Length: 79
Image (cartoon, rainbow, N blue to C red):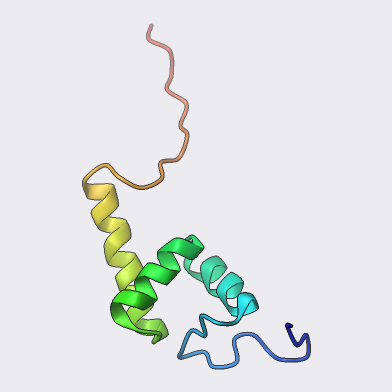
């Protein structure tokens, strides 16, 4: 199981997708879901700089084309 004495991440330059604690760490750091992280690592490999760039580029693409998550926003009533 997880060794609580190990520092997470063990290697700040690479994402270890077989360690649940690292997955939780990197999803929180990048603000993405596990599925998005898996997709990014599958596309560009485990290097954190490449994963960060991939996630950043894909979040811009989703926003540009109307996909992805949207934040709830209050619209003022018409007067």
